Length: 574
Image (cartoon, rainbow, N blue to C red; front, side, top):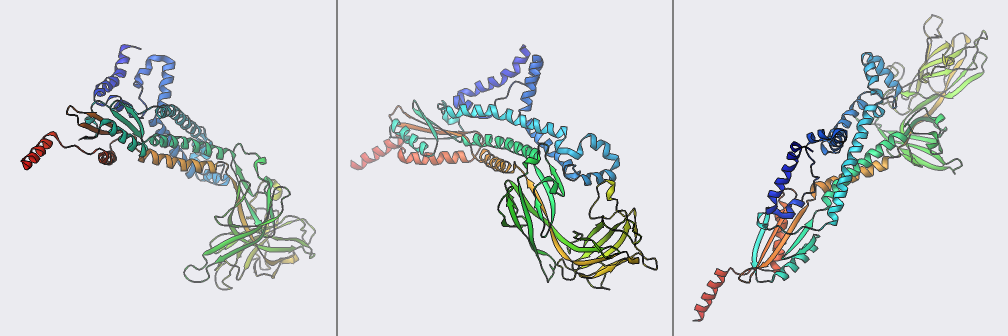
């Protein structure tokens, strides 16, 4: 190393040497902060190894760790503002249609897959490495401090921030013995020396600091683990129907990159009943009060059936998976006959709610078994609007007045032709594709549509068949989620809060008690304290300790005062 490189590194040492006469080993060793290395510019003279060491020091510094944590929070912003492919591919496609100008840039920056992008992963890994590189040396340093003993008292205790002294007739050995006992009872670590007692307390401050950093690593690991192995799927289940926890049963499903179908816990359930209650009067009329799904659960491949209940915010837990109740609605039971009167379709068709009163919309698709009166194969389709509580004819449009099924009505528009389901392209089951279909018309040429109440039948034009509204079923949607790292993340968060509280509110401090006999034979007692940071608690704590020790070793009269008292007493006798 060159002479110019040495000079900056020696400056701090000279400062410490200058402070040594005042504080001695105690002041030099009290701080638990890591010692700064030479200035960053000194690394330039080391070549590749020097630059590597410089980069490592920068990466493991607190400044860079905070910068990386800030960048990680900034990187999460586009993940919350821009739709993510892993969450909802349909929303991504819609965003791309409405923001065509930004699509090329967004794809290059992987903004549709933020949390698995190269830049977000790089920040995540660098933060992980930075925390580990910061914790390991601090841990060894802390272990060394725990194994060490409190340093000897400085030469000049009166120069410390908190200091007190008094004279006593109690012998120095007795004073030090009382001090050792007192400090030990206050959970100080004590160490005796020649004419003094050294004590130290507050090691939990650095423990809290280490726990906080370790907890951050635990949370990073938990989030990564959960992201890689997570799974979440949704399923709409009709009353009386069942669900088995396999991939083919889900309506939609997304998972982490390391997830496999074998990770799904084996279970199944049947929706026996769904109850919903609403406020019937007052300004909150129609407000939901209670939703509850009653199911019959079977764990494993051959588990015994057992009854269970699922409520909002009260999921059903099965082998690490949680089954949440998300929503509910109505499924009108519709039957369709062909021109010969043969029933070619009979099923409960779920309708999707459009408002809080469960005004719902959907589509009824008859894909097989229909032949028109000419014997030609066709498909039937009906766009449907359903209201559980109709205002009545002449009372307005098809908008529900209340979410309960008090006066259910369904409005149907009938089409015939090709539904397009044979093209191999996916379709929305709740929407009707009428591009290759023709709407049935009345004799006057108007579109054919009709409203039906339960048990009513609609006859299609030209004897094309009939449609009957037979009744109503209920459905509920469930979300089955599996987050393997959630418990670990919660434990890490609690540990981080506890560690942060310890590092902020616990103070590292040292107390010294010196007792020596003066030239007049009276013991001089000195007490002083030194903390890592300025605080009003240290003088208060020292004052409390001094008051207790003073009771065991009370002050002796000053020589001048003692002589005056003796002369006064002698005069009274004379």
